[in-house]
Image (cartoon, rainbow, N blue to C red; front, side):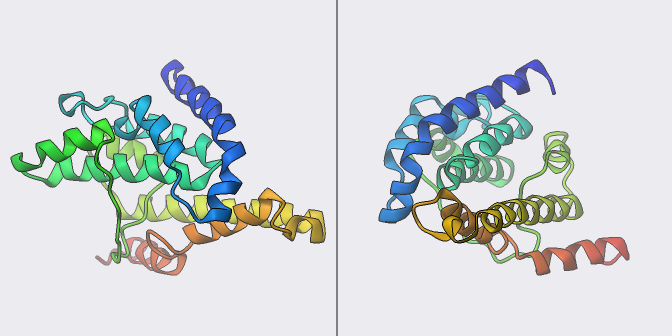
Length: 209
């Protein structure tokens, strides 16, 4: 890990500590984390991985997702804000036209928000080898699928084992593990289900598109 990457990890940890006390409230009230969004906008993190030409931070995807990983340890919903804004902006910058510049500038400034609807089996994101491939200008449905399965299945297994260890106490809503289990379970479905992504991996291994 480079010194710059370590700085992103430290920033993520500081923000996680700041967001953690509010995480249960967002979940209980089924509310949008407006305070957290405002904080991310204030720090310029909603456009962290967008090019500086659009007013973004110019960070690599690896750096951005080191931040996302740390924030997600406290509040998965807030981590998704960083993910959605930066990934959507990168996609729009790569495949949009000149008319999208204003949108990209607003995404970078945090004055525009995105929502994502995905049905494609290759639409999964997350692990750093796959992110490094994208930073290097290479894309791979195989690496993306492997990354998402490893991250989501691993996260679910860890939280589930922790909850099991605490017995009934871990299952009550007062315990953060109950919320965390629902959060990580969602990621096994959104962005491409585990089963669909396994099909993507299988096709790549046997040389089929």
